[in-house]
Length: 320
Image (tube, rainbow, N blue to C red; front, side, top):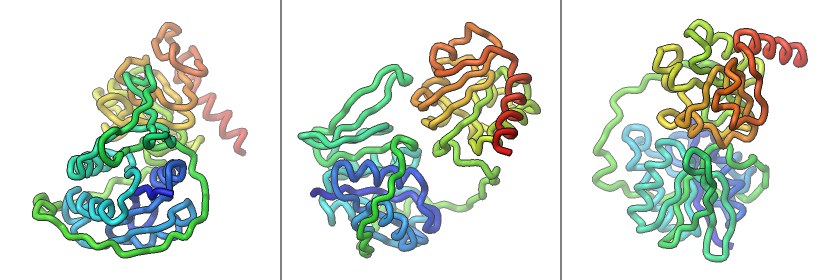
């Protein structure tokens, strides 16, 4: 069976959930070979093997932390040349898409971004994409070179499938461009204790109807009762009620959770573009004609200042 390269997103050896999802998808089209780079790369092997990696290629070097994406592209290209894979899968983060695009250009291959599903085809992997603000789904195949595919988080269930996970050192030679842009400082992001927005299984978002920064406490309380991430519409972000890092939409982050709760969000196309692939969508809005209700699985017509606290209380009661 052909091998499939999977780029590993990890933090000091702790593998992030989107990578485990990629391993599930990779097994549909071949044998997953994981590529782990940077500090703690070798520590990823156990988790990767547990989820189907037959081989783990590792390389640790200061360049991965000290410079931007080019060293990682150099390493992924080295892995590609060593393995000759049937496809290369990369998590669909901002960094992941830049790495994938640079790799595709170097190896002369086509690229598919933001796939939400993947299956084997007679002439190579076939990816499903959600396009035009999720109004349509397309099935796409790369026709030139080795497919390089980025996959959105929450596109597949994480499935354990123990494999050998043989660890091998990857030989990497950094090019002249690898050290062209240096990271001079880092500021740790303040932890909220909530899941990462793009990876969360549940997202609770607030919009213009929240009517003030102080009222986002209602949204946060509901999210905390569900173990969810907090999102915001562009209107709420532009008003200064919530940080831009939490914006969901065309000019923010794209999410695809199992459950998305939109509170006080009208449902403009720009917001829908970032959340319409959610598996189940619930809206709370006092305007019964709000466009968001054309999209949802369940809708509540009512004032969120009444509905959201009642919902939070009911959830906490059932949990207790």
